[in-house]
Length: 218
Image (cartoon, rainbow, N blue to C red; front, side, top):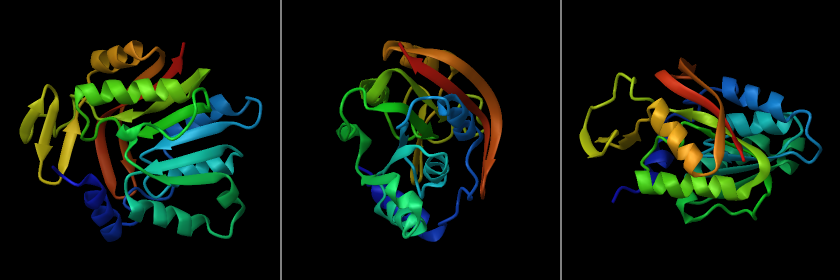
């Protein structure tokens, strides 16, 4: 079995700014939705990496739990915020999200996941993850993020693990159709509020035909 924490540790050690410094468009969009909520506004950043979006959320005055399986990524984030006022707003957690999310029921105003659900998660594991997101969200909380789509040029390359899921060296990708994404969200108790498809360039990385979504817990 692949040690994904090790894979991501090696990635961030070699390319500590692989996704640049600027926040993602969907992070900015989510912040606008949250801006008028009563404080404290709490955001869970799933697969936060070195925290470019976690830092942005904290800069908006939100309380952030930044979660990643990679100790190297979390150390990069901790180093970036050390000695700043942001350190008091960002709680860092190294864990496997499949071990259950470390938060009580109804705790967060939003769960944010940039290209997280499209990693090496099976359909059954995605069902578990979406259900966990619903559990830790407030009744009207948001789940927002991006996933790689079946329109991606790398779709179908490598060994097929299950439908729309393929393994290549040092990577397993689960690609989403619009219908599949909406079904998984609906099963977990979410209503899809917006869904777009666009190319994304972040730092040194470019992704084509990414699905960008905002859903709300019902």
